[in-house]
Image (cartoon, rainbow, N blue to C red):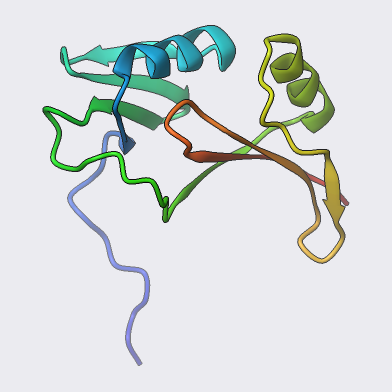
Length: 129
């Protein structure tokens, strides 16, 4: 039988990179609206601490490896302790792309989504019993 639990040499951080036409607009959103702190400043790439060792990297598409494509094929999901508090937090900061909060008993979550300035979808979810 194959051992599914193999080891690796180690990982310090997990970074998901997103690519923007307007990097400054994305920076303002993740700092001022989401409240993320800049962890690593690489000039045209800004890496923000999300939680634990998870990070989001914002990249100027002119300098980065990829372009900001209109059709997104990924979603950033953030598991939070209080989905209602996050919904209010974002609404109070003028985010207009918020969906209503919905419950999925099948997935055991309360959830809503919004779009960031580059049209990446953020899913905010809370576990329910």
